[in-house]
Amino acid sequence: MTELAVKKEIKAGLEGLRGKIEGLVEITVNIDPLASSNCDLMLDSLFDSEEALKNYAVHPAHVAVAENQVKP
Image (cartoon, rainbow, N blue to C red; front, side, top):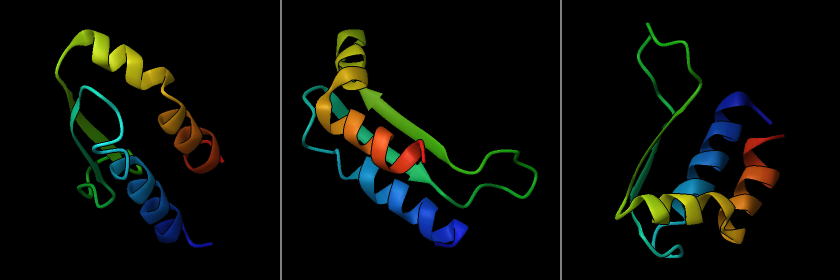
């Protein structure tokens, strides 16, 4: 799998969490950073509270994306 294909898979997985996790207001993954950037991708997310962020971190849907798409 190409690097771009991996990035697209991660983007689809994370952005697919929208509407599935309570308190997750917005989620966007940028897979085309600036040339001067030192990152491969960027996650930008908005939660309605700090508790919602904590719940997102351990939510089974998020954990599945992290374990199956991000970590490998």
